[in-house]
Length: 633
Ligand code: ADP
Ligand code: MG
Image (cartoon, rainbow, N blue to C red):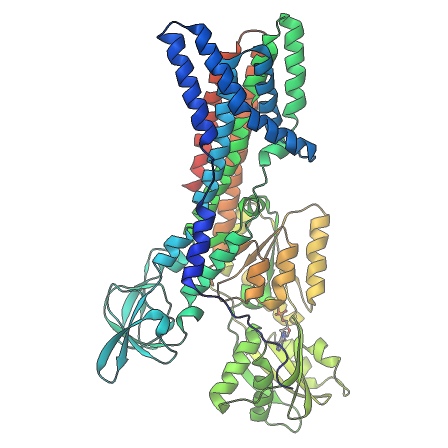
């Protein structure tokens, strides 16, 4: 039997299919029918009332509009209530029904207009804020100039093969991922990183598909095909993110639900006080919490599109909200705090196998794992030894190690505690020595005896030491690092990162328990990770951030936020956007509630008639909504 798991799922990269999907999500049925019909009715009645001196007919028109356009709204709310969902739109429904009963058609139609246009705006905002897949696809690299001997042939970027020599002229998009083999230039990576700045790239450096070659012509060698390249990965990520975009949680419903009893009490009290039944309607009209309903999604969607511009893909408004609420940030170490590319420092043989033999055995097995260490071992082995045998009975223990059979030998590679489970002989002194030195290492056990150790140099990601104080400044006071690595290395890395709280030698389930424990204490947990073993932790956290489009696919799927670039400082941006967005949303809500309550009291005292109330409510609306729009700036 050959390798038993396939590490990477194959991806679909059919631009036509994605384009079709994108079109489907763009349609919104008869969203504008109700607002338009109510405006027309309102205007028609107004003409009769003001210019044709026929208030009787005007009232009939308004009344008909109120019944026709109000019915769907009432129906929808009642259906929701029957299903057990109580939302603040109950107040609007109450106002509409009361207006019908009291024959206050003008104020009623205004409520219908506010409520229906609010819903339309909510949907419109949602569709606007989703990153336009079609636009993303249209600006994908399409053309490549393939160099064969000394002639240039234009081909479609999708036809470029790994190893092809390609010429990229200034101003053109880099067609596929590759390495510059001759020349140097500057590239504009903003389509992928969201940051508009030029990066100088010279011979030997890698360049990503979808970025723009700005200055000089360069010759590159393709290292990936179009469908495996960075640009396609990002399109794919965005598509997935939009597929499982969670429905907006209405913050308004959470904070505003108590408005319903307050409204009822004030309306009743007002009626008793003035002795006039229209007071009830006046209170209802002023109470209609459109700004609450609208202001939040507008702010959340604004935050979402602002994040997208910076290369931060947030899967829905509730993820923005959770980012804003985060109180504790938990970082995984390998691939998150440290670079995803640990270098092999040395291979230390213990016993009969040479370091070359150990590399061959380890490389063979690690070909099938997606762990950053595994990738490094496999590529180093291939580079040095050429083709490697495929292992048999491969098994991965995420965050701990791997086991398999190579050339009939039973092999286990992983951290010390993992390997020990497979060992017959005791601890080797080299382990003690390595632990004292604070290095990351993996042990290799062959046929139950410790046969070697691979030591890595584990580098901090640039930007981490600045990120930590920045997060604290954002109000995330507790920051913790979790790792399956050994204690000394964990200590050394965390102190260089500026993280005081760290836990080491953890199994993936230990990480889950820690997150769960924090959640049980009532805290909102932000988890940042990368790699196949982080997927459960990312899903468990209130908000999980997956690093980099190159991270293992599985963690990107369970995460709530995905950074398109392998740049940990974006975590700071994500949190900043989340906090700011939430602050703006709450500001709008607080303003809306305060003003509504204030005017409700005035209305209850009999100083506001329903039609005036409708206009006042409209003004409160506008202020809240404009405030919320700041979130996207
Ligand atoms: P972290 O928790 O810091 O992200 P991991 O959980 O990814 O670290 O890995 C913890 C330790 O487990 C590593 O230091 C390494 O020794 C070992 N390990 C995990 N997976 C593998 C693998 N595929 N090959 C070798 N060692 C591994
Ligand atoms: Mg990890």
